[in-house]
Image (cartoon, rainbow, N blue to C red; front, top):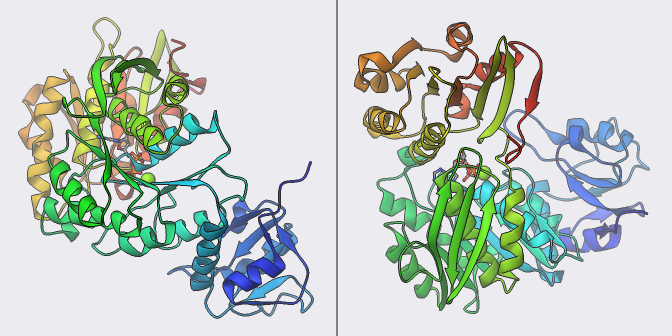
Length: 476
Ligand SMILES: Nc1ncnc2c1ncn2[C@@H]1O[C@H](COP(=O)(O)OP(=O)(O)O)[C@@H](O)[C@H]1O
Ligand SMILES: [Mg+2]
C-alpha cells in the first residue's frame, strides 16, 4: 500500500509560486537528507552552517520525489524533479499556509516555558486512538520547524498538533498566524531563556502572542496554578477568545486535579471534569507529568475529543530520550538505575527531575546521586537560580551531588558538605569520577542544558558494564 499523496507538483507549484518542469507527487516532507524517506519532498534550507542545496543530489538519489530549491545545483541534472522558488524558507511557509487552508483538522498549538514536546507527544498518543492525528516531529518549533511541520500536515488528518517555541519576544506571533490554532495550550510560564527577557511578565507576554493567530471561536488552555494565569487569560480575552479551559488543582479549574499518587515510574491520577471523576494512570514519573496530563485532557476537551478515552491512553506515555528516560545498567551484584535528563535544563525542569530522583528508592544503604551541569541562558540571576537548587536536593534526600560548570559551582557552595561530590568545569572531566563512584542499587540522575553536554556522562554509565535494558515503566 502506498502512502497518500501530500502534494502534487501542480498544487505545490501553485502554493509556493514556484516553477517545476517534471510531474511528481510527494508523500512527505523533510529538510534533512539523512532522514529522507523515498517519496519525500526535500526542502533545501540554508542554515548558518549548511546549505541544503549541497544535499539535493544526494536526496534525489535516495528517492526524494522532488526538491524545493532556490536554484538547480550544478550537480543536479536538468531533467531532475525540482521546484524552483525565490526563497526556500518563504516558499515553505507559503506551502504551510496552503496546507492549513485545505485542512479540515482541528489544530492544536502547544507553547509554554517547559513541557511543550512532552505535551505534544502525549496529546498525539491520546488523540491518535480516536481519529487520524498528526503532530510536528521532534521539537520542530521555530521559524523553519513550524512551517516544515505544517506543510506536512496530511490532508486526511482530523487533528493536527504543533509545537511553537521561542527564545525572544516577537517570535511566536508570525508562527501563530501561520498555524491559526483552534486550541492554544500554554503549559506554564517560567524562567527559561530568561536572559533575553526583562522579566517573567515579559515571557508571559511573549507566549500570549499565540492568541494573535486565533479566531474568536478558538479556545485557550491555561494552567490555573501558574502565577501568570490571569495575565494570560486577559491577553486571550483581548483577542476576543471567550473559551478558556483551565487546568490545575484550583477549585475553578475545568480540568481539576483531585488526587495524584506519584511513584518512581508513573502516577495514578484522579481529575474532576465538569462534575465527572476520571481516574487514569500516566506511564512517566513526576509531578510535572501529572500537570502535563491535565493540559492534555484540557486540550482534548477544548478540541471536542473524547476525554475519558484520551485519559486511558496516558498509561502508555513514556519519558522521552534525554528527558527522563530510564535505564537499568547491570553491575556486579545488581543494577544501577540511570535517569537520563541530559537533553536540557532550566530551574523548573531541574526541580521536577530532582523530585523524581527523590521518588526513587535506592537499595539498602545505597544512594540517590545527582550529576548536574550548568543551566544556561538565565542571565544575571544564574548564580542564585543554581544555588537555590540546594533546597530541592535536600528535600529529595539526594545523597551525593556531582557538579559541572561555573554556574553549578554556586550550587556546590550552597550544599551541605556531606552532599558535595566531585566538581569539574567541563562534563568530560567528571565522567571518570562519576563512573567510579556509582555502584549497584544506586539511582543516578544526570541533567544539564544541552550545551553543557551531560549526555557523555549518561553514555559512560550505560556503557560501564554493557548489558543494559531500557526500563519499561510499570514493568519493574
Ligand atoms: N511543567 C513542568 N515543570 C517542570 N518540568 C517540566 C515540566 N514539563 C516538562 N518538564 C521537564 O522539562 C524538560 C523538557 O521537557 P520538554 O517537553 O522537552 O519541553 P520543551 O519542549 O518545552 O522544551 C523535561 O526534562 C521534562 O521532563
Ligand atoms: Mg521541545
